[in-house]
Length: 169
Image (tube, rainbow, N blue to C red; front, side, top):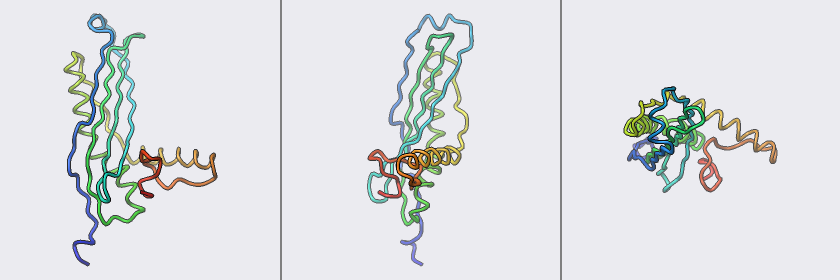
């Protein structure tokens, strides 16, 4: 078997695609003595850029409130460009939905913590994420939605922007 037919997986670049910070109640919020409550939302998005090139992004929204006032809101989108060749089609979607976000996520964690500390708050370090569990949860949700709609099981756990799955692109 030649090297040209060997499975190949490589990250070409990791980059911060978007980062925003809002502090709607500053500076008064800094005078509050209570600890904030923190809510974190996490998502994964993927897009095929070329035949063997994919962009995978992990998106986090962190909202901290003291009583009913927003202390800060941070939204971050960390992405990576991945080259994936000679991978069986049934393995492509899990690779994009599990392995790629696992590589990109530590960069997002660092950028979010840095933005929060630069805003004058104690940094919040996002918890480790089991992207396999997140992927399987998304597959189950898609299966329920598709079975409710037309009785078919989903082909993919990663929904590409045009609505098709990573496998069907």
